[in-house]
Amino acid sequence: MKRITTLAGIVLLLLPIYSFAQTSEVFSNESGAIKGYDPVAFFVDSKAVKGSKEFTHEWNGATWHFASKNNKDLFVANPEKYAPQYGGYCAYGAAGGHKSPTETDTWTIVDSKLYFNYNQKVKTLWNKDQAGLIKKADEQWPKIRKD
Image 1 (cartoon, rainbow, N blue to C red):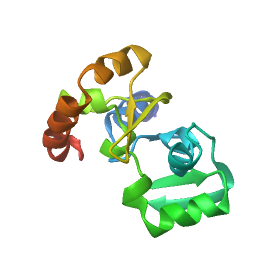
Image 2: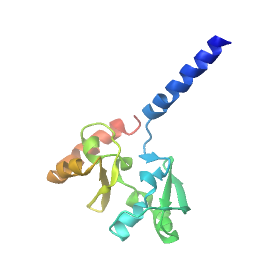
Image 3: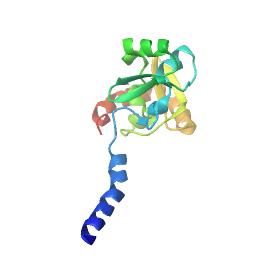
């Protein structure tokens, strides 16, 4: 019995590590895709707006939240237009060939596409060569999107 208890304890200790190592194609947490923020609001309101549990939509393996029914309807009609590039992971990190979490205050829209970065310091680096980094990230994303 002691052996079973020990084994169960080890499994429970390793479970969070295993879960953390499993990455999704969309950056999300317990609040949903892009931390529960409304992806459409970045385009229509030009700011980060927290979505509501009242307006959600399942897409690309994640739950997306919206501030209004109108924003939800816009997204459902054309998710590729409003969803962030690289699944909402850090654009600078994607250019370097890896997935990194992001902060919603680091958003940028370039050529009608939404990008996020790890933090403001990384966003400053991103801003120095957006076109070059987008090109690199576009090349890397197919290799890392399922990692």
